[in-house]
Amino acid sequence: MDTRTRALIHERATSIWLHAISPLHAALLVVVGGMVHETTDAELKEWLVTRAQAQDPKMVALMRDLFGLDTVTAFKEAKVPVRCINSAGGYQFFHPTAVETNKKYADFGAVIIEGVGHYPMLEKPDEFNRRLRDALKEFAIKK
Image (cartoon, helix red, strand yellow):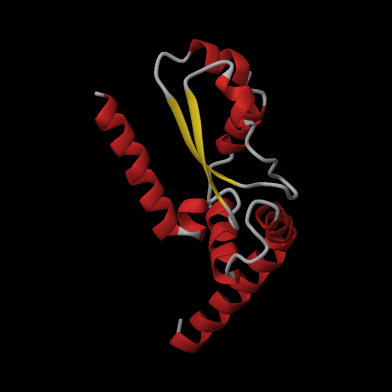
């Protein structure tokens, strides 16, 4: 098989594959769009969709289990401080973190980053890393 024929077959196979996944791709764009801030870079959104498409289907079951997690019980049973670096929320898939409520059940604290969604470490990596260092310093001081 010559190079041109091989290239044509590859191009056709790619076209068929892209057509087959386009509904999934579109659905993932909606989901990812709801997980990031509206100002998040389009290339980052596309990268997240590509990564999501490549995941093992078992991840769906894991996510389902995560959404069913009884956080009150988990916090009550926590034997260590719980610290979060979270989005300010307030849009599609994100509600603001209930810091005061969570403090009722555990040694809980949260740092809130404005203008990010589910991926603050990707959307604002410098701020996330600075806040993470600060949280780790807090634990080192308590020791």
